[in-house]
Image 1 (cartoon, rainbow, N blue to C red):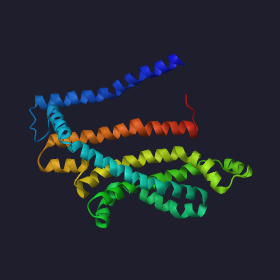
Image 2 (spheres, helix red, strand yellow):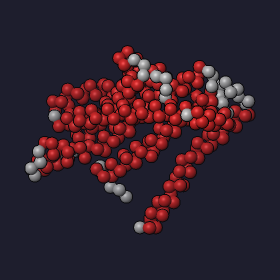
Image 3 (cartoon, one colour):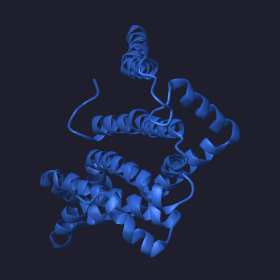
Length: 265
């Protein structure tokens, strides 16, 4: 057991290095091209300029404010979406009448990007927190609800009948059979929906607020601060990559191993 754990611990740094290698190569190529062709900072910044912009943002606290505002909006919109989407998906999985009514609506709205909701969100909620949370809610809600329905639909009817024959009521069947069985699909829906929500967030922040990473990009454009624009792009990609690889992907993998059709190795 100890040798196996040591092997796993040894492979993690190597895997991290392999994952970082393309980004290191990209940064080196970026700096080499900027220097070789003497690219104007108004067109594209150098690596040191972006680093200086990042240090300045850390020093004055603006980066913390923008990142914190964006993460708070994502967390709020996602939490509201989950509280409503999972029960709806479960209800659709239990009742054929509910499923017949809501399934066409979910299929229709699940393909609409979060960005499509921005104009009507600003009309309803004005420019600010509410409009952006509404955009994120729509990006997550329909995907999670539909994936919850799919998860419940994959549970064999024999399991439901077996639980009922043992005396389980409808609520117990939902809690002990349907919800655990649907969890792999629910987590997959959360991961997919958050990807849509993150993109919608950045677009909404460019229009409907005065804080956040999207607003930081939009404001930097007006002052031709390409180093801040590139810094914001790097932060957007890095934060999403960290959320996906460190939180969502492990959660999805462990959920599938615990409740899905595969077993942990």
